[in-house]
Image 1 (tube, rainbow, N blue to C red):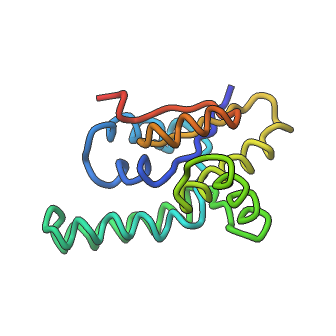
Image 2: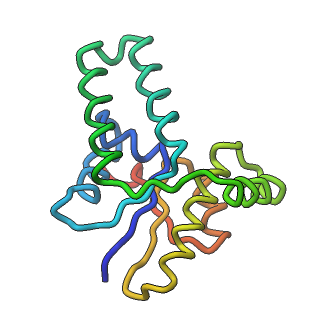
Image 3: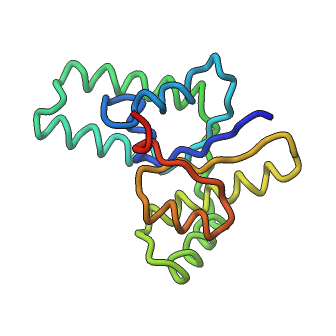
Length: 155
């Protein structure tokens, strides 16, 4: 079985900035694993926001920030299947916020993951795992039928 992972921003940031769960994220995103990695198009904005915040609070140096941004660009172009935010996805996200206590971007992330899950139903040997460090979002994802994992559960 080949695993497919949908990484929300709270999980993906751990690939670039050391914090709890980073080693596990690095292990599942290692190109040698041949795992399929999917992210939402809005993740681009969210990861830059996270890194810029660290730059402003000086927990990240300007040099490290520049290296991370360069690596993120390379990975977006080469390693991730980026799910476009289109009108259908926005409508799904809107339905999700009406049904669940979700922040808007979390709803877009979840809607993108549900799209990937739908695409993968035609490939039975793949299993999608929704990865987030947000327990509330994970519980809603589970209730929507997704397999879930939290990188904060790993060293």
